Image 1 (cartoon, rainbow, N blue to C red):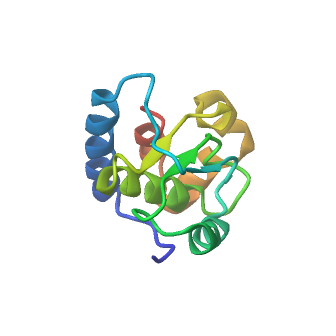
Image 2 (image 1 turned 90 degrees about the vertical axis):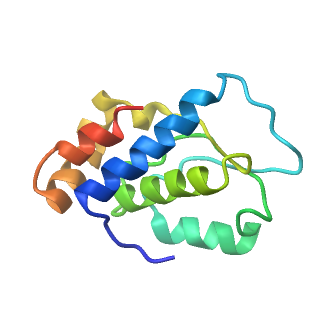
Length: 132
């Protein structure tokens, strides 16, 4: 997996597919054991890749991410989009719980908003990714 930005249109398509899956899931999900539980990735794409290398690749390993996917790191957009793509491809193996850093207020303070502006030239992608 490479750490590259998708086009704005690709982000829209990916998010629409992810939203479909997430809307069908209930608020309470059954998670099959064993499961690897991960928290506070904070835009550290390369650390996420190392986590998958050490913990096991999806779909061989079940994952539960406890939020805080974005902010602080340099690759929040790529990190969040990878997690959404894996959720789409392996919906029963990837569980994503939103953290406080997935709120509009927090992302405007800790870097995600600015990263979206820097990488896309507007806030459109930020709005799309905050619409969950």
